Amino acid sequence: MRIWLPLQPPGIVGVVSAPRLRWKAEGDPRILLLGKDWFQKCTTAEKPALIMAPQHLPSTRVAPLGLLLGLLVTSCFTFCLSCRNSKDFALTNTEKNIHKESETKEAREEELDTEVLEVFQPTHEWQTLQPGQAVPAGSHVRMNLQTGAREVKLQQEDKFQTNMKGFKKGKRLDINTNTYTSQDLKDALAKFKEGAETENSKDEQARQATVKQLFRPIEELKKEFDELNVVLETDMQIMVRLINKFNSSSSSLEEKVAALFDLEYYVHQMDNAQDLLSFGGLQVVINGLNSTEPLVKEYAAFVLGAAFSSNPKVQVEAIEGGALQKLLVLLATEQPLSAKKKVLFALCSLLRHFPYAQQQFLKLGGLQVLRSLVQEKSAKVLAVRVVTLLYDLVTEKMFAEEEAELTQDSSPEKLQQYRQVQLLPGLREQGWCEITAQLLALPEHDAREKVLQTLGALLATCRDRYRQDLQLSRTLGSLQAEYQALASLELQEGEDEGYFRELLASINSLLKELR
Image 1: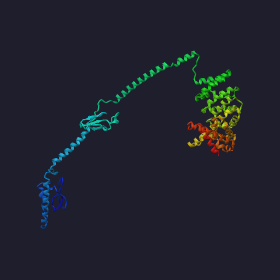
Image 2: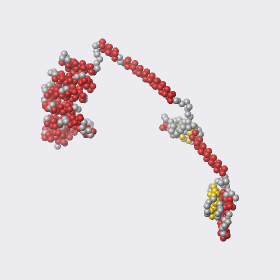
Image 3: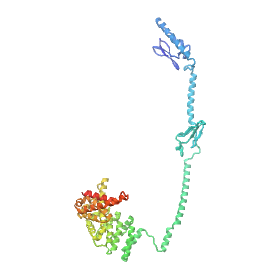
Image 4: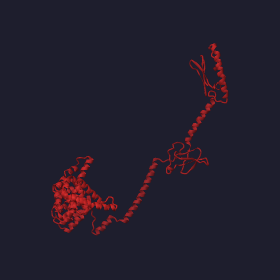
């Protein structure tokens, strides 16, 4: 309980509040605060000073004020007697405050001391933790209920690695003073490297010894070959020797044919074909197309077809050397069927992926030559190859234009060359729409497949002519019924995506486009 009483100046204000008692002087008006602990917190000298009545009050106000003060003093005195067991005074008992501050300081020192405790190194087995020992962060600690001791071990995920994140540098770490300097580490690494080189050298010596046991030195082989009159030659040397044999007037027909046959094996490799060009052998073979011997023409074309395949450098030199004209002449003239097969092979290798050669092919009347070749009764077997060539040329140009659109590159040199190749108009003009439709009557499934592919590639150019061709419609209807039966047999045999089903799909697509 607290009561504020006014005091007349000069006066002393006693502010009594648990747990401390403070005296202070304040400005007017003066007030007196009496708390519930006033009697037990004030000395005997202080009590009268606080309960003295003011000296300048009127007599009419002194009696009630004295009565009020007497009642307040009595109630406070009674309350103080009930709390007589309390002996702590904030103002009078300063020793205990000092004692508490010392205890707080000691507690802080104990907290600091915990940072330098001995660090226990746990393992993957439970071990007893002694009092005063600290554990690394991340360790697994438990209380043994039987012994009451704490036990610690590493967690399962740290089986192969100790978690050292909780460690801090300080006195608690046992630092080994036997440290290594940078020079010591360099020396150790140098010795380690020397040891590794020694081991590697030993392994290399062992490997070389094994190789020597399995293989003989090249010098020894050369010596033995010299004794046997056998000379080791590179591919270049072999090709030079074969060209010389072929170009020699003293060589027989069999020797020339054998030389060309062997040469074809080497020029399949791109590097060898370019080497053949480098020493003039390619032109010698091209000139062999003018030979009066059919076998020489046949095998010369065979060598050229192998050298042209996917080799732009050789293709360019062949065009400049007049190979295209000579090949077309051989196809247009009377030649053995075997020779025309090889010549057609060389022509296909020269035209594929070479738009400039395709332009020259159209200028030289190549489509007319191929049409005459297909219409020959003796060369029907070449018809499928010719159709396949035309299909490849048409799709090659389409793919080149699509690629240019995707890459948004509208003016590369190769694309410009493809755009100058007027192949589709030439095919329509030369009657290839009807010729291709007639080839659909071939009995072989493989031939029909290639013809169907070519019909689909020419559909945009030949659509009106296909619709007017009644024979084509009847042929497609007949093939549809035939391949429906074959596709059903494939399904019965458990083939979900069979060969005949693909052919049937191509036929159905053509019929749908021609309706």
